[in-house]
Image (tube, rainbow, N blue to C red; front, side):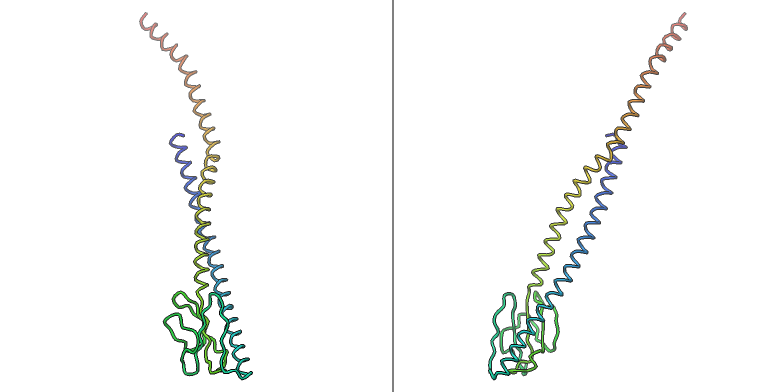
Length: 206
């Protein structure tokens, strides 16, 4: 490749890689944002479902005259019951906070839902559902997106190199034809010019 060809090749390659990387980055961002929103929504509804189920069991136990209620353990979920005197009567609060109203929020590595659904049956004012599953899922999502972007960038770079070669091939052939034509024309012109120059030299000597 001559300097013009090299310049065209690298310009096309650079433009293709930059534009493709921008497209991959935007696609990854949109995908990540959509998946993150879906995960947060699912996590909220899981917390709400757990709180409603436990609250229903508390109300049922109170209706049947039971004085105590112990929920079954669920993987990935930490529970806490707050009584009407604002004391933890079951479980534990995983992060540095204390519930004062029904709400859903993130604290530290945990997502927390505070539910008032027990309606003070069995003296329980709040059911606190805590889980860090969402943060683990978002972490896995980030790793997956970054991994796909990495391999996507490598494949895109290889594709850009091949396309650049294919793009430059007809240009290279055309330039080669022009150079061959110039070389042949120069050769054809040099022969009569040389002969004419020799004839003129001999004529001058005579």
